[in-house]
Structures are given as C-alpha cells and as structure tokens.
Length: 630
Ligand code: PRX
Image (cartoon, rainbow, N blue to C red):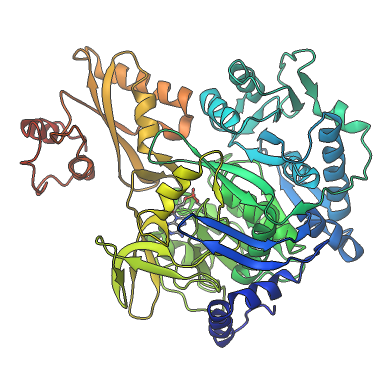
C-alpha cells in the first residue's frame, strides 16, 4: 500500500478502506513477512463480540521488526538510548545488535522453561534491556505484560495474579531524575502474594544491593551471557496473544486488554508510517513510558516494524532542568517528536530561555497523545517548539484500540488546533446521543466505532463478559470508546473528555473507584468519593471527598497520610491533589453517589448544581459547598 502523500490519496484510501475493507487490509498486510498467508481477512460480530483478523495466517512479529531489516539495515541504529543522567553516555544499538540481544533474551526465557502462551511480567526501567525483554517474549511466543515501573507492589500483585505470570523480568532499581527507586524490593514485596511466579530475572541498573532469593532470583547478565544469538522464532497464529496491557476501569479492578499478533502488527506498522510520514534515516522520539500503550506501539513496535531509529529516554522532562527535552532534541537531532499535552503544559511554565538556548531545527513533525490538548498549549508548542513550521498531529486512541485512530496525517491533511481531526483509513467513527441514536452532521455526543480495525483489543484477559459489557453493550453492535466528542461541519472530530468514571491525570488513565478503594484503606477513613477537576498542568487533578469515622484533629496530617496510603497501594501518580473532609456525601435514595454534584463543586462552580431534590439528604450539599477547596 502506498503511503498517503496528498489529501486526495487520503480520501481515496479512506474510501477503499470502508467500501472494500478486506481488500484494503490484505494489501497493507502483504507488505509484511508471513510464514503462511491468511485464509480470511476479517470475521466479526460486535454482538458477541468476536473479531478475528488474518485467520490462518502465521507469523512472528520480531521477524518483521528485526530479521526482515537485516539485509539492508544491519548497521543502522535501531535504538538510541538517552540515559537518565545526561552525563552518562548515550548508547546506540544497531538492528544487528538488537536482533542478537533479542535472540539471547528469547533463549534465556526458554532456558527458564518459558514457552508459547506463558505470561511474563516485565517491570523494568526505560533501558534498552526492556525492549529486549518485550521482543524476547514475542520471539518465543510468550505473552508480555509490561507493568509501569511507577506502580506499587499492590498494583503489581493484581496485575501478576490476574493473568498468572510465571516469570518476572525486573531490575535492581531505576533512576528517575535525582531519585533512585528500588524496583527489586517492590517485586519482593509483591511476590509474597503471587503464587504463580516461579522465577525472577534481575537486571543490574542502579547497583542497589538487592538480596537475591536462591532458586527464585537470577541475575540477568549471568543468565544471558551464555545464550546463543540464534533463536528460532515461534510461529504464531495471527490471532494468538501478543501481549496483555492493563488499563483502569470504572470498577476498582484493572482490565487486562488482550492484543493479538497479526492485526496489531499490520495496524501499528501502517499507522506509524502514515501518521508520522516517517522518512528513512530519521530519528523518531516518543517520550511515553513503555509501561503504557503508547510506548508499546510507538517506541517499540511501530518504529521497528518500519525500520526506523527510535529514541528511548530513561529520564524525566524536568531534570536536571526543564530544558532536558530540548537539549536531547538538539543533541541527537530528533526529527519527529511525540509527547503528551501534560508535558507541554508543565514545560511551558519554565522560562522560555530553556527552550531558546537549543537548536530545534532538526524537528520536522510534532505529535501529541493521551488527553485533549488545550488551545493555548497547542499554540505554545507550535510557536516555540515547531517554530510555526512543523505540523502537529493530535493523535486520539486508547489502550483498547492498540494504535492511532483519529489524527491528522502530518503535512497531508489539514490541522485544526484541539481537534484530532479525521479518522485514519479503516476507522469508522460515529457520534451517538444519550438515547442511543446516531448523530449525523455537526454535533456532540459519545464516540463509538461502527466497524472493527485490525489492532483492536480482542477481549479482557479472563473476562470476556466484562469486555462485552464495558465496550459493546452501551450501543449494541458498536464499540463504545467512553469518550465524549464533537464533530464540526467539515467532519473533524474533537475529543471532549471521558464520559465515564475514568479520569486522566498527567496523561495517565485512572479509575475513580480504584483511587477510592485505596483512600478507604486508611484506618481513619469511612468512605470516599473521587472526581476529576480541571488542573492547569496535569489536565485533570484528583479531588477526593472523605468521610472520617471521627472528626480529624489535624486535617493536614491526615491528608498527607492518605496521600501516602494511595501512593503505596497504587503508585505516586494516583495521589489526591485535594482532599476535602465532609460529614456526608450526596447520595440518591438508592445509595448511589451523585458525582455530577461533586464534579461541579470540585470545578469550583457551585452556582447551579441542578436538581438535588432526589437526594436522600440534600443538606449535605450546603456543607460540601461551604468547605470546597479552591
Ligand atoms: O480519553 C481519551 C484520552 O485518553 C484515553 C485513553 O487512554 P489510554 O488508554 O491510557 O491511552 C492513552 C494513549 C493512547 C482516551 O479514551 N486521549 C487519548 N488521546 C487523546 C485523548 N483525548 C483527547 N485527545 C487525544 N489526542
């Protein structure tokens, strides 16, 4: 399939992709190496729901991301690693070296009796070995489940047990700015409650003195050393599992989204090349963490499937100073830079000299992902980073969708600040009203998808019923995204935010129920309710209403204790920003908390709270209004 180069190419491809989806995706898929061609491009039924792409096809994604490139790219840099500390030397890993390291990790896993279909948990810092680990699993057909290395032991336990991992790949520690985190100690604590884990393999990164449990814990360097650099790839069915990645749900329990080999490969390869218009020899930098789907799809798989050079950054944007991103762009001559609106907003706060002292002329294309970008941040990014000459692709997608769904195509389709604009070929969005009727033309409603695309999640691991209920029951016969959305007269889409109980804090997707159950773990807390509120930098902040058993004697002390409990149970990213103590919550007679009221209070808009007569005790509302935190 030719890459879209003009607006008319886009319209043509879009038309074919919807009128003849089988032909369209077969052509895209035929660019990849298949050991056996598929028998059927697509079989689907959104009522069950069941979606199968490229059935009967056999492949290994690492052959496509690595082996396929060796004849002409062996010495090209595949991964350029920029360490946490800018005074530590960056590392360049060529396609040949990456192939070798991935094979060794694959063999290491096999020597530890990991086989096709086994689940392997990866809890590692942003170092090249993390990519070797992911691809090493894919090489031998093990299912990788990467857990963000900022999650606490409790969150790790839930994710390991839910899918029954047998092995954990981790590191002694990780660096984050001037802090060191002892990852192995967190793993040790978690494993007290993980009966399925037989072994851990531990990479040395920080040199912390991790105690090793004999017979269970092995050092990565010792295990990998003697492995052969030849690792026969496992032949996978297109619909075999490639990975599980957990995302927050409206209930406390995270959902293990299941992605499969063939469709994921085809869609991620296609969207990477299309959206970013990647050109040979360019350097692509996605600043996400590999613990999130953005890192899976656009640090690892997308760029490597395209034979690109991908920059892997271990550090944080604010250390040693807020110029770190811009310094790194100058240092390595980054051509395509893909980041989150929250990072842009936080770096905007620093004096502009942190931007202007660096040469950013290598940048050709900018991107954003993870949450709506506000108009002001869009213009700041465009003016100061892109110098008004780089298209900004505002890419809308989700863990569940696997890859980019609605986005401008850089330099090809028109931009409109704060709009993700047009659906990519193969994507058929629609807007639904509250009564479940389709909205046509200009309007605002709930965003749903009418037709499957190759990289959509196939199920929630071990819970197909929850998959059906969460995504396919709101609008029968359609995939419901959970997002609100507006469509303008030109057919451009603008995501307005979540319409369910999920909040997006600094680009991280979190369930309010998950935070509430963590807050409730504090012995002084009787009940809590969490809502999001607009936050200048984080996009949304966490506002928590707390009922205590007894009136707290020192509110600030209790607030900081509650924050620590949440950090311990979920991870520091979930810490509440504001905690308001209340004596009651606005509940209906059936006991349901009316979050609409709490959201208004948290937003600082108490002028019109709507109808509160259905509340069990309307008087609590006055107290909540009086105590609202600004
Ligand atoms: O609400 C949308 C928001 O992030 C949600 C998905 O979060 P997650 O699964 O963590 O994946 C994030 C990275 C793909 C969506 O339901 N979101 C993502 N991208 C955008 C966005 N909201 C507005 N504009 C975007 N470009």
